[in-house]
Length: 354
Image (tube, rainbow, N blue to C red; front, top):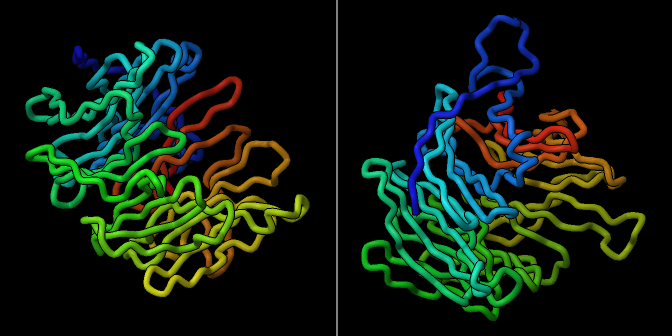
């Protein structure tokens, strides 16, 4: 794979600034367009996986092109510079960064021969030389891979429809252990580094499960609930955020709602009471604050909101006619939201600084 390093010109478009002469940066208040993707989108490019460095200063994200089967990995630093650090053939399926911010972890899939070949790589920033960790042929993709606090790697491997398994790889010797087999079809959703737990979705059975890093202490939540999907742990690891379809058998009443599960007791709590679709995306600074995608169910694009559970107050992040995709938080602050958005005329990567 050929490595290409390019420094790209970055144009920031900003809304909500009172001083028209103020310099526009990633730290400007309001909504900032980090990268305009209009031209790239017309050529088949779109934003894929995204991760923020643990020191909160740098955004790493994948650009994927399903038409030409290419990818690139880019970064945006705290000075708002955009750099392409990797480019090659195939599709980026997952992306993560080490706890010390010294390297990124990513997976690539390629099906040109008719059989899927998936590869897992590390890219150390110091040497800038890719290290191939694992290759799999004919057993699907590496999904949702993440570093554990000890530097080892946990990931889901499978064909992307059924028959996926949860695995752990020892980074030093490449030894792989199956933590959950394909019978449960587990998808990795989050890593709780406070309590050393994994959050897993049972894909085909609408199940929420947690287990220890070694595969032990499996706990099943919500296994009898239809149309439920776990999103992540609260910052302290005490709650699990999930989306659930309320009244799924009534076409007039069915809607998405946010719910939480107490990790220790299994108690479920309804977090949103509105009849609109309240699709939860992440916890904020605690288990009483959420990021939501809200729509009325009429086919129009929804909007992103900060939501306070106690007061039921919605604070808008977006007010436009675009379809948004939430990617995470920036600067180690839950008030700084990264998202991509598109419509028929515009496609871009944004940050909203509350």
